[in-house]
Amino acid sequence: MQVGLTLSLKNKEGRLKLNLLDHGCYVGDLSIKLDGRASWLYQLLVDAFEENIASSVEEGISGKIKEGITKHDNFLQALPKQISLDETAALNVSFVGNPVLSNSSVAVAINGLFTRTSQILVPQSYKKGYQVSSACGGLPKMIKVLIHENVFKSASLVYFNAGKMQLIIDELPDKALLNTSGWRFIVPQLYKRYPNDNMQINVSASFPPVIQVGYQDIGATVSMDITINVLEGGETIPVACISVDISASCSVEILGNNIAGRITLQIFSTYLKWSKIGKLRIHLIQSLVSSAGT
Image 1 (cartoon, one colour):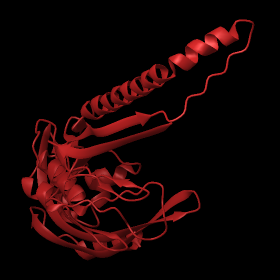
Image 2: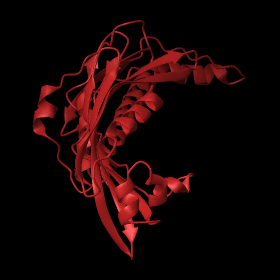
Image 3: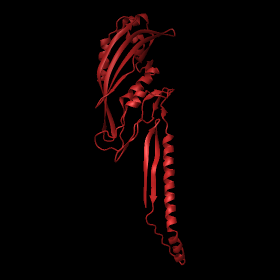
Image 4: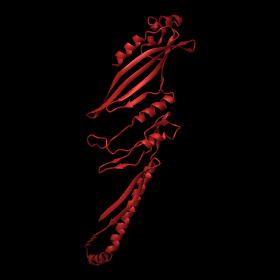
């Protein structure tokens, strides 16, 4: 018996469409042997209807092929085109381009861009400009995953525009750091104007982080504003703002069954953006954080 089929797998509006182009089943030789007292009679009937039996087998298998392809196509059509990650962002998982077939693999690509949860469409330029590759280089692998740097950039932009790249620090293990009394020797003017008042530090990104994917590492540049607030009489009073620029790189490698990573701080610079409490000793803060980062 020989069974053959030809399929097509193409992208249709972000989903994979599976079509059965051609199929067939051929029973070349059918042999049925019966045992028993009346087996000779049944054997005559089997031999007489051998062609009809073979034809029924061929039709039955062909029908199962159609049924199976339809079932798998319905499964592909039911796959979501967008997955919600949280209340802010969703991941566009619609397919991009047609699958690329080789002798031993099928390569597919998804859009992968982050969008706001309320959005559906993604930038068309990215969808049109990407082509699926069937190989990543190196040794053969069972599963290969490629992530374009546009995926990281879209995540950065979505969370920045949603105002999520902001951190308010109002609790620390060393409580003295969030009270003006702990700053009286570093910034005397602060303690003089607001003696023994609690403080709050607001850290927020000035711009969406810039992410670049290189051959061996991923680089990121982040610009932040650190605003020092004093809590007095139920009011939050901003007293100074420090701008911080950080550039770092991250490399990932597989060690045995584990994934290991290394982060290298390349640039750390600070400057006083504005102040209502006189000059701050920025160089001391920069030296302290740089030492901690390395």
